[in-house]
Amino acid sequence: MSFATEVKAELVSVENKDCCAIAQSYALLLFGRAFSGREMSLLTENKQVAAAYTEAAERFSGVSAVPERTEAGNYRIVIDDRDALQHILAALGHDATGRRRVNFGMLESDCCFAAFIRGAFLACGTVTDPEKEYHLEFSVPTRGLCEDLMKLFDEFEPSPKMTDRAGAYILYLKNSTDIEDALTLMGAPECSMRVMGAKAIKSVKNTVNRKVNFENANLRRTVEAANRQRDAIAYIQQKHGFDALPPELREIAALRFENEGMSNAELARMLSESITPSGVSHRLARILRIAEQLKEKDRSQ
Ligand SMILES: [Zn+2]
Picture: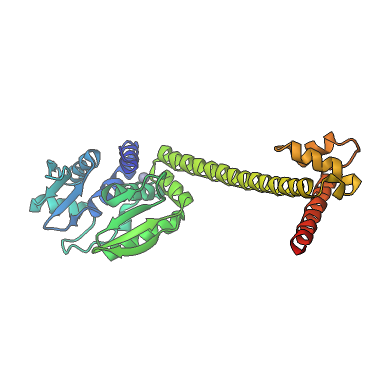
């Protein structure tokens, strides 16, 4: 089941008060594929939404339409009975010219605004799986209707953006927090939690990856430094012997050479005299410089 299907299942199951049931039904019809005195119709992939749409049409007209299955497996509901259409338009305060704007007079109180947005989403909305992408949109058939829907969002403040695509007007949200808010507002708090959960998992993964990368880089630097030191010590020992080193560097040179994986702190603990890990680091740096000087001298001879 896609995330959008889960969201719609949760939205369809919201228990509406009478005023909100009217608002939701109104939006289902208004945001459908066609809404006029000639035809009202909806095309949806979702069986429950198809049922909600026929119920909405029946509420205002008394006529029950039967969804038909398309070849692609979607559901199409068409109401073309003129009397039924007139009843619906009259009940919703629309005239037969097919002017498709929201009649805000149909929304009695604040609770109805959310129910109306829910109905609009059921009719023309979709949302991407939050594990893949943050995207929620309404694909609205006309610009005027899209602007009216935008006004409703102003009240609630996820801040959608508007664009057009293939003849439809798209109201969309890209921000995960806005999508969470919109889902909660429309009546899908469980799906909203799923978005939050997906975001938390992504954030932990990123932190772990950053930490692993950081530690890998540190480890690599430590190993590279130890290898350079061992090469330098091997050169001094083979070409000149440890006598070429000042006495205070001889012990650390031997220890570094014999203990490949040891950190400076561990080497410091093994030394017969007490010095700090950074003291060890300084001495190893001096050994590196001496090896460079000896190599320089050997090359020039
Ligand atoms: Zn209400």
